Image 1 (cartoon, rainbow, N blue to C red):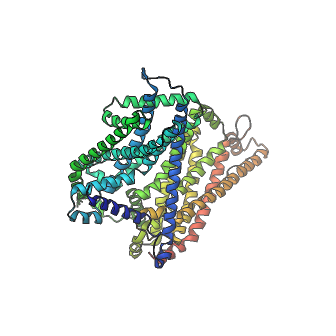
Image 2: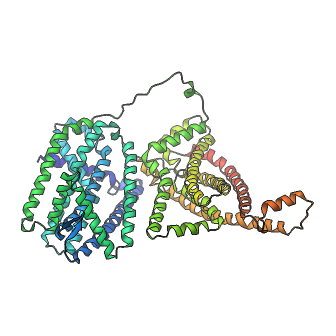
Image 3: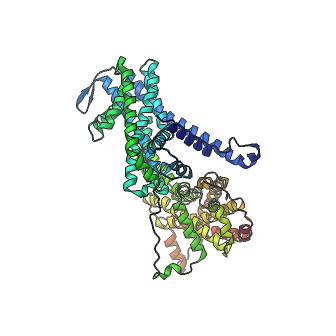
Length: 620
């Protein structure tokens, strides 16, 4: 193998480590400048370690339960799809299922990172000018992608085989074989994924766009993560039940058996071959078969490098700028002057949806958080057969609780989205250009707040639409939505003022403006504090005061000649003489609307001059 391949791999890894851990080993002159960067990198390392522990731990518990149960089994033949299967073949099918899952993880990680290894950076553009063969260049990229994209899957495969070896008492040399099998499995997955990725890029050039692949990754990975979470919860709830473990083991063996007869049978055949090698079925010939698997993977690697290296280089030099802007002079509406705040509002919406980092850490939370919580609760209740009981008890819950949920859940979800708390920081270095424009600062902030309120309105819809099916009282939900919108208005004003005080305008990666911004943390803490204050405010003005007012009304002497009094009694009281709670809550919500409006006016007057003066004092 050409030594240039290893030099290119080393250079790529060194560049990756330099980008990820820049600032950790900087010289003394740059210590103060890079202190924040050092802290963020250390936190990122801790987050990666935590992710390893969580993913590896849950996977290890699952493998441990299955293989422990199988090691204590009576080794009898198993019936799978109407056919009798020997116990050793049964073990192979179960290991194969875990290998297939690991294969899919490596395959997806490689496929979804298309944009990262098909973007022509300055370094790769320089490499293409050197006398380096396309096969050498492509081979180094394949090995580099295997090292980077298969970290998690390598961890899972090593955990799977180590747990199997522990329970089935294999000899020590098998653990070395397991390590080689893990490398072969993940390299095989990458080599299958890369040609498919290149062919799809050749057919659909939009897949090369980073933003497109980021959104595609969301819609592919999110259902898989939620599905795996649901699957794991179902397993963990009954993990001590032997009959459940037996049914689960038979079902995954049946899935592997069915896949071996599908169109994917060549790929499944090699995975089953590796599983058979790991299970010890080959006995003394295991080293011979291990060498055969290494040679086979090497041969496939060589074939793919030879066949697809030219395609890789040609796609690498392909530009994404295939669109041409066309101007239609007949559409004079495009040149009409619009209010500045509407222009800012449109710009903010476009920037949020154009930049994946802003979208994932902002609006996506509005959809992701309720979805994950709702699905988790639904699955837990459904598996425990308590869903009907919970729904019936929810419908019998006091009406005031629904109003609390409608107002406070919408408000908290809106504060967690970090829309307003990073609104100035997201401008970055372009904020100096905005300051130089002849615009009124108040119009600028009006557009920012309108953008934040737009997503608050989405939060209200996300909470109240499902709530309507349990609590179908539209008038109370509409009043609650208005109260929540006013509370959010107050919160967004304060969040923008916090970000305006110390904005994070110096960033190279958009993630730094959102994830590594302490203003977002302060804003979330203030949002939680506000939710507590709003709760007590609602408790006072929503039920206590209206109830006392109506109670005094009932003690008034009845005057049959007073038509207004008679109509009020018929409207506010039921036939049995009890007060209609709907009107109490509507009156309380109306009082809350008035109080919140007054609070909003006070905060606007207090912050108006601050927004004007601070706008020009910020240094980008």
